[in-house]
Amino acid sequence: MLYRRSLIPGGTFFFTVNLTDRRGDLLTTHIASLRAATRLVLQHHPFEIVAMVVLPDHLHAIWRLPDGDADFPTRWALIKAGFSRGLPKTEAIRASRSGKRERGIWQRRYWEHQIRDDDDLARHVAYVHFNPVKHGYVGQAVDWPYSSIHRFIRAGTIPATWGVDQNRRLG
Picture 1: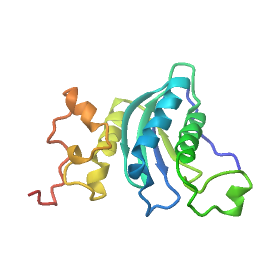
Picture 2: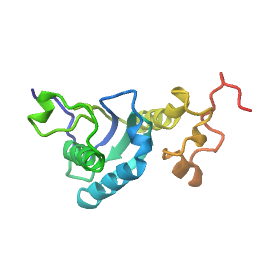
Picture 3: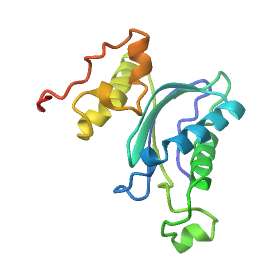
């Protein structure tokens, strides 16, 4: 089956990429492997990571592709494969995946959205950074270690007090 993707050269895109087992925590448990796979892809297929957050079972990223380049599917395939190769083969693998020599770690599909303008970008960056709070992992965004929010705070773009769960008492 062919999926319609918005392949815009030099575009900026928001992604959600999930593990097959949404109860798992492979992404944070093996964060070094994910970072290494991403760095390797960046070396051979450059792009800018505008914002990113890694949660135990899924991640959100905003990428800006180079001018004339629209190939984010290859980049995701390489990141997923590189991460998967570094893990022991303990997951259940369905026959449909086994026949294609696939692991059972990642959901095959992912969500992508083309960023339309600066307001759209700002909303998606905020979504990325607030996601650990939304899911209840932390009471404020700065407390999640696997987030680009720390880069934004160092740059002075976001204050360290941004992204506090108003419904949760911090103590």
